[in-house]
Each structure stands twice: as structure tokens, then as C-alpha cells.
Length: 284
Image (cartoon, rainbow, N blue to C red; front, side, top):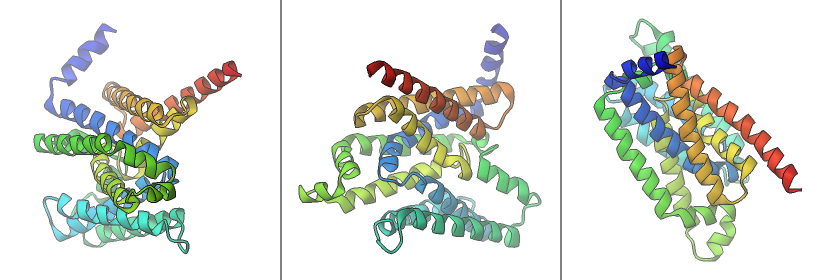
């Protein structure tokens, strides 16, 4: 045990490890807050779709030669989020079909552009890093950390300030409209916030694993608690704990950060499911 603490102390003496921990915990927290809303609104895979859109936008930015890819990734992802939520309410194109259509299309176009126009000598490595987040979280700079902190504070503030409106739109949008709530505005707000979270999470777990940060903590919380507030709080705490454990394990074992965090989330989901079954059986 002493050797483990000494090893962790050595690693945390490096700034990039501290940056990875800070960003990882903030992203996990933000992802879990809106995850409950997305699961209840049947948009669990919107994170997956938007992450693929972000990947396509990143490919365009790389091809164009932009040093700051966020200039393209953020607005494109926000627009895609708005289109997904609006299209998902259209009777002709259901939400899951819209997500699948945009997700597959953006991923295919992005990969095609990278292969056709990229000047990198290691295209496969770049794509793998982007899709699975294998190294990007460990290459963060101080300005990236401050950007993540700023966006995280914005996301948390929006969620707290508009908590009751988000709650009403989540459970019964028609009733919310009937009581005078402008549901379209709050759906738009949710879409923008989710898009920002997705862009940040690409650095942590990569494009293909982002949905796990959104879905697993929320589903784990729903196995144990029933109220929206309790599920949201437990989801946030669990997500942060899983991210912390995942990052520490990846440092000690040398495993990919993103995949390790998702594996811990899966384990937490299984444990929560068992706990919920035991508690439910005891109540009966």
C-alpha cells in the first residue's frame, strides 16, 4: 500500500496528471447532471450522435489546418444538438432514427476526410486517440483546464438555476407548455449544454465512449432511488467517484483512461442493480 501511495505522489508531481484529474472529475460531474434528463426523455444516445458530429467537425478543422479546432467543433456540435432535439419531435423522423442518421453520417464523413486530406504520418493513431481518448487527456495544457473549469461552472449554474424548468420539461413537456413554460427554449438550453459537455468529454473518453458517461451514472442511480432529485444527486456523486477511481487505476496500471473509467462505471451499474434488488426485496 505504501508503494502505491508513493507512486501516486510521484505521478501527481507532474502538472499534466493534475490537469487530467481536474478535467476528468469536472466532465464526469457535468455529464451526469444532464444524463438523467436525457435518459428520461429517451435521448440516451444523443451523446453518441453528437460525439460523432464533433469527430466530423474536428476532421474538417484538421483538414483546413486550424490550430484551434474548437472554432469549428463547438458551433457545429451545438447546431447538431438543436437539430437532433427538434427532429426527434418530428413524427416523420423519430429521435432514435435521427440520432443514428446524423451519427453514422458524421463519423463516416469525418473518417473519409482524414484519410483523404490529412498530412499526418500516423492517421490510424490519431483516429484511435480521438475515438477512444487514449492519450488526449494526458496532453492538456493549463488553458485547456481553465476552459473546462469555465464551461463546467456555466453548466452547473444553468442546471441549478433552471432546475425546476428542466424538471418539468423532462417529465411532461405538454403539461409544462400548458402551465406557460416555454418548453422549446429549455429544450434548446439542454441541447446547447449537452453539446458543450460532449466537446469537453472527447478529451477524456473519446468519441465512442462518451455515451457511457451520460447513461451509466443515471441508470445506476435509477436502480436505487425513485425521485428525480435523489437520482440526480446520486448520479453526480457516483459519476465523480467512478472518474476518480478510473483515472487512478489507469495511472497505476497503465491502462487507457477512457476505457478504464467506463469499465468502473459498468461495475458501479452492476453493484447498484444488485443493491436496488436487495433493497427492493427488503421493502416488499
